[in-house]
Image 1 (tube, rainbow, N blue to C red):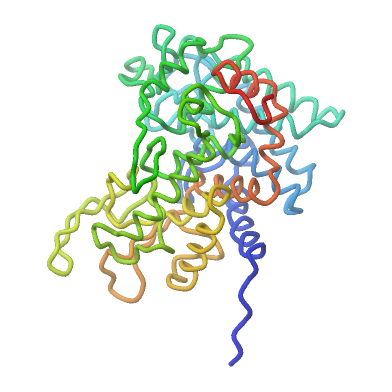
Image 2 (tube, rainbow, N blue to C red):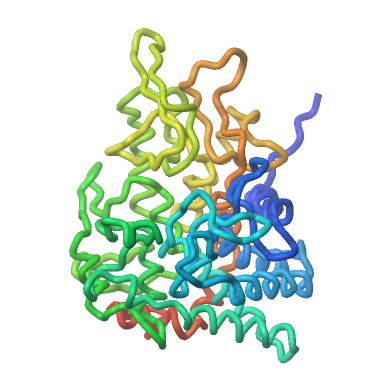
Length: 431
C-alpha cells in the first residue's frame, strides 16, 4: 500500500482555514446577520463572533470561497440590524449607549441570559465593522451604505460613559445593577479596546486611561524568557487578529525594548516549553503538542488516574505556566499562533493530525481535547461543539500569516491609527 504524500504547509493551512470559514456559512441567520456563539442547537449569537464573521467574509472573497456581492449583502444585513436595533435601558434591548449585549437571541436579536453589556465583545464586533468599511470601498449604493453604517455605529459608542472617572474602562454593565465591579487590570486582549476607544471622534476614552491600564501589567521572566505575562494563549492573539503590532511600541514596550508582536512570539515559545517540560505529567503534552487557552473541558470533577488525583474543569480560561491547567489542549489556539512562531504551530498541527486524528472532524479543529481524561476506547475527551471565536481567530490569523490581508486593511482605518497614537504608539507603519 502506497501512502498518500504529506500535505504541503499551504495545503494544510488552506484546509484548516476553509473549514473554519465554513462555520460562518453554517451558523448564520440571513435575516439579521447574527452568528451563533457555538454550534450547539439553540445557542445564542455572540456579538464578538459576529465581528470575526464580518472580517472572515472578506477573507472568503479573496480566497474565492464567497463572492464579493454575497459578502457585501451579509455585511450590510448585519450593519442594518445593529444600526437599527433597540438601544435603551430595557432589560431585553440589544444594546445601550452604543455598546451591545454579549449574547443575543439568534432570531429576535434581543439580550439573553441576563448577559452584560460587554465592552470587549462590542469592540471585537466594531473591529469587524471597521474592517468591512475599509474593504468595501466601491462607489456603489450597497458599499457606500456599508461604510456609512459602520462609521455611524462606531461614532455612537459612548466610551466616556463606560470608563471609571476618566480612568480605565469598565468591563461591562447590566441594567439590573449598573457597572460590573471590576475594570481591566493586567495585560489582556483589551489592547484593541483601547485603540478603538481612544480613536473615537465623538466620545473617546480619556488620554490617561491607557497608561492607567498598562500600569497594572505583569512583566515576567519564565524559562529565561522575559515577556508581558498572560496565561491563556488567546490573550496574545485577539487584538493581533486585526492590528499589526510589528515594530510599533507604546511607552511600556519602549521601556522594555520589545513590542507586542514579539511579546506574543515569546508567549508562544513559553507555552511550548511548558508543554515540553510537562511539570504535571499530563498525557500527550510535549514539544509538538501544546496550546493552553480559554475553552471547553471534560467537566468539573476529580478523578483518580494511575494513583494520582486529577481535578478537571468545564469551560475555563486555562493558562500556562501558572495555570489553571487540567491537561486540556486547544489546537486552534496553537494554530492561531502561526504568525508569531510558524514552525512551532505547523509542527504542532502535524503532530496532532498524526497522533490524534479522531479529534479533527470534517477538517475542522476542535475547541479542545484532553488525552489525560480516561476514555472507554481509543482516543480522548473531545469538545463536541465548534466555537465561533476559535474558528474566527483561525481564519484571521492564518490569513495574516499567508497574505497580511487584515493587517493591511486596518492600517487604512483612520480611527485605529488615531487611537494607537493617542495611546503613545510610535514607529513601524504608524510613522
